[in-house]
Length: 411
Image 1 (cartoon, rainbow, N blue to C red):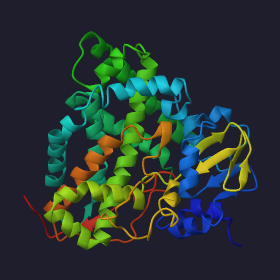
Image 2: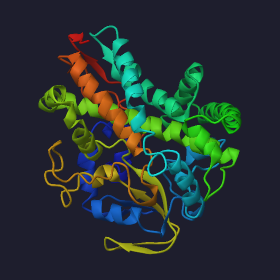
Image 3: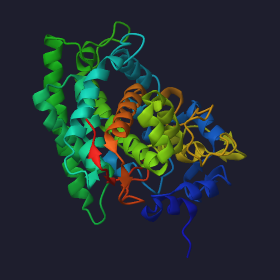
Image 4: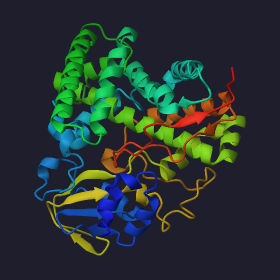
């Protein structure tokens, strides 16, 4: 018996290529699963709902059960309060405003850009340490460790403590990607333990930054803002943990999906090797073509919403599928073709509206550096396994391993 379409999309067997299923899903732009969930898959409808104040990010406002429970395990495992990503105004606006003040323009316009030389050195060091060029696991050896190091440098974590952050990141990432047969109770306990250890460490570091501020993001989070006051310690911890978890996993997938796509499109890889100035356009097209966040399953309608010829009732669970919207032929010409020369790449890769990814400038810079350096330094790179083994997570989609080979590492 054929599975319902939503179940097929969640089925791990379809993880390597969900896009034909998305095309089928778009035939019904607003699909009701017959239980309590409404799935929205077309570009303009997704964009509209991302800006609709009748859509909540706070799961506590949901009155109809989402039988798929994509975020339920992570919520139950959490030892921390919901980050501002899971809150609505006005709480969301206050926390995000303070965080943005210490992250980017207009108050800290050089913070991310000023990290470029440091991040470039990290990228070079990781490539130098690859070793055997006959079989490289790009995830384990490069795209997984790089974003954690970047976030540590952004926050101002002392270099000697970075290995501890890598350990916590490993545990928290595992909670997002459960393995078949794994005991969820044990996994949830490991997640809570890691969050408590991370929270305790950050609390101590925040107190040190309050007493002796530095030129880093934790110091500014500890100081707060004149308009909104200081963040409480738990708010600063939760925000820092959000940076570690959300910023890490999405960037790992963006870099890995990016290299996989370039190896499948060798003419674009060659162009990037010869001219790294095209890296920004490549990254924008990647965010459309292979976005790291495929599903946004944690929205709730707080009032009746008429969209796409369907009324979504208040209290209903709402899924948005940017991975589908980015391939909508009513929005993008020839959407299944990877084309960095595309004139219009207004993608949904970072979301939109009040919850648009505030870490986007860092993710863009990391991915541009990563892909341009890999293109230049790996001589004759090639895929050893295609499709690669994917993570089981249907929300944050990317290869668990990406095995490649090359002739040599150029200096």
